[in-house]
Every structure is written in C-alpha cells, then in structure tokens.
Amino acid sequence: MAELEYNEEEVLSLASQGDRESFGRLYEHYVERIFNYVYYRTGNVHDAEDLTARVFQRAMNHIKNYTDRGVPFSAWLYRIAHNLVANWHRDRGRKQEIPLDDLPVLPNKGDHPERNLVRSQEQESLLRMIRRLPPERQNLLILKFVENMSNAEIGEIMGRSEGAVKSLYHRTLLSLRDQLEDQNLNLEGD
Amino acid sequence: MTTRKQTTSHEEEFDTLESHLAGTLKRVAPPSGIVQRLRGRISMPARETITLRFHDWRTLVFIFGGVMSGMLLIITVARALYHLTGRRG
Image 1 (cartoon, rainbow over the protein chains, first blue to last red):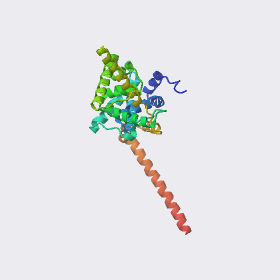
Image 2 (cartoon, helix red, strand yellow):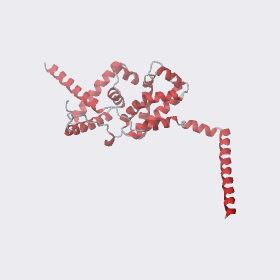
Image 3 (tube, chains in turn cyan, red):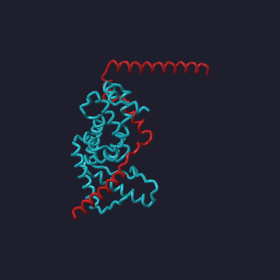
Image 4 (tube, each protein chain N blue to C red):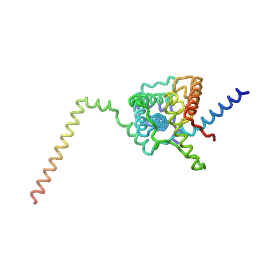
C-alpha cells in the first residue's frame, strides 16, 4: 500500500530539504537493492551490511547537493555504492573469495539432489569467475541479473551509452566462456 | 555453412551461460533484522555532528553542570538514607 503512495520526486524534494522521514522512505525503497549490489561485490554479509549503512549515511549527508540532472536517484545511489566498494577493495588490497557459507545457492524445486549438487558446484565456480572480472563487468552482471535492469538503465548508472553496455556485455560473456574453457568446465544445459 | 554452424554453436553457448548466470546471480533477501539495524545506524547522528557538539562550549558546560548536579543529588540522597538507617541500627 505504502509502495503505491511512493512518489519519488516528492519524497526526494522533501528529503533534500532535510526531512528525515522522507529519507527513511527512500531508504525503505532502496535498501534491499543496494544491499544485494554490495553483497555480490564484497562476498560477505557483514561487510555488505556495513557498506550499505555507509552508502545511505553518505547519501543522507549529501542529498542536499543532489540535483536531478537527468540522472535517476537510483543511479546516484549505485554510484555511491560503487565508490565505497572500490575503496573497500583498495583498503583490503586483495579480492576476497566468497565464503562458501555465504553463497546464495538455491536449489531448484523438483530437481534431483545429485543434480542440485552439480548445480551448486557450477554456481560456485561461476561466482568465483565473476569475482575475478574487472569491477565494471561485475557491476554490469549484477545489475543485469540481480536487478533485472535493461541495458539503457545500466548505461545510466555506469555513465555509458546503451550500445556501449551491450558491447561490454558481449565481451564479458566471451571472457567468461574463455575462462570456462581454460578451466575445462562444462556448464550443463537446461 | 561452417560459419553458420559456428554462430549457432556460439549462440547456444551464450544461452547456456546466460541461463547459468541467471541461476547464480539471484536477488538475496538481507538476513532478518539487518534492515532495522541499518535503519538504526542511519538515524544515528553522523560522526561529524557529534564532533561538532564537543566544540560547542556552551553545550559542554550545560552537560558538565547537569552531570555534576545529578551526581551531587545521588550522593545527598545516599548519605541521607545512610544516616537514617544508621541511626535506626
């Protein structure tokens, strides 16, 4: 019900005037998306929680400076998240492996248990490969598959044209396919 | 003919890869309580705001005076109680 009454333009205007309640509504609207983005970029829940909080704290502190110049609020938030994740990786000086306990591997209903096991192993390998990709390619895959965004929407967030996103996506798939071949991994078709 | 076969094979490979990516990169629900905890953290004043409060001398004097008055009141009540119960004993 609250979702139906959510008028982003109005909420943004109030939030930028320092209205905390309105910022709270923006938070409710975007927290899960930002958490997912950060979670897939960092690979663990604790850092994802910490960084998500920092994204919204930074957004709250700078929302007065946010002016709608054709860039959606979501794009602005994702850019903050991207910068904070980049700093996080730089500070650590290494790319963390995703702890196995944290992997969001969900079995498909009706599948045979052995098939589920194979799927999980495939998904683990694929996640590791994704995390070895350059950050912008990881961003692209997360936004495309986790957030189900179109190339145009991804382009707005990444500051690229729709065509450039399409081309980057193609190169990313090629790169993943080559990595699979290098590791002699054969993904099972459905 | 060979080129067309190769293209079809590439497309099939990409389709398989995309379906696996869709199965792997799924939206996850944040663990329960995390959203409320984050909300609590966000509604906390920022570090800079807290630091600024410590530079405000008038507020600091008020806080210090309040703490000292509270402590004196507690000590007075405690002493009064001690004397009352001590006399009875």
